[in-house]
Image (cartoon, rainbow, N blue to C red):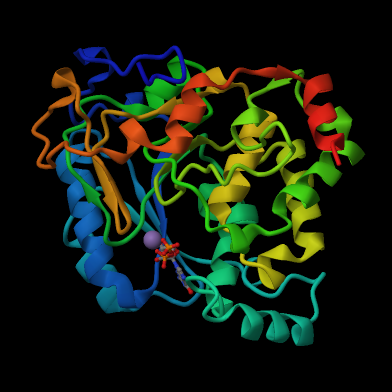
Length: 344
Ligand code: GDP
Ligand code: MN
């Protein structure tokens, strides 16, 4: 079956926690970066997360914005949930042009890439991708957290989740949880793998003894375009806070590809996971029915039909290239990973 970690999603109530037992909540929150203009979308998402999961658990929501949230935004979003919502503004130093790129070259790159792919000419989209890659886990409101669950405005949650996914991750030593694994648009990440392997060769002491890097890197040392779709992710934040991840992010930032190309936080998180984690530290939340514009996942197992309102049919995750690849790929030793990185 398509279960990547040995952890099987719980069918029973061992992870169930009745409302009001706050002492059993982990240090975790449900987090979104969002704009004032996306108020309807974030209300809908939070309402669905509450209906499907969080009304029984009461994890806080943290909403972050590069601008001040309006009073109207705060009032209307808080109206859809009893859970605490914290509204935060990004530190100015976390949202902006990387110090390693020049404005003139960025302008040329945006003009060149405009129309080549989605958001090819968008400056703000690049700020967003860089922020979610290197800074979101450093926001002061997240400082005390061990886990975050990332949400976005305008997504759908189709099934009940009757257990605490944070506890589930903790109890199974899981670091990264996902729902959908598409392939990236190749011209957005033209040099990402070549820049990555340079970092590996310069920092072998930061690499783990084993990793599932072959999910993202093929035998010819080319990026497979496989990534976890980061608009949903549940992550042990110690991963993003690790010396290896930070060094890797700094290296990417210096290379300029967040601006000259359009590196997304999804391929960055995913390549980092495949390079720095073992396969059994990653979990597919197959039981989380989910939709973000572009792809849907609807579980097809009878025991996962928990009041789902999606219809399983030609389910992407049961047939897609990257889910199949993840199913079959094995951990390899550091020496083999370095060999891959050295291939011409
Ligand atoms: P896509 O999923 O790649 O198409 O990108 P989205 O437009 O959905 O953006 C990803 C996330 O970042 C969403 O949660 C957006 O609300 C958020 N986001 C994108 N751009 C901005 C921005 O300029 N400011 C703020 N505050 N949030 C943004
Ligand atoms: Mn989105």
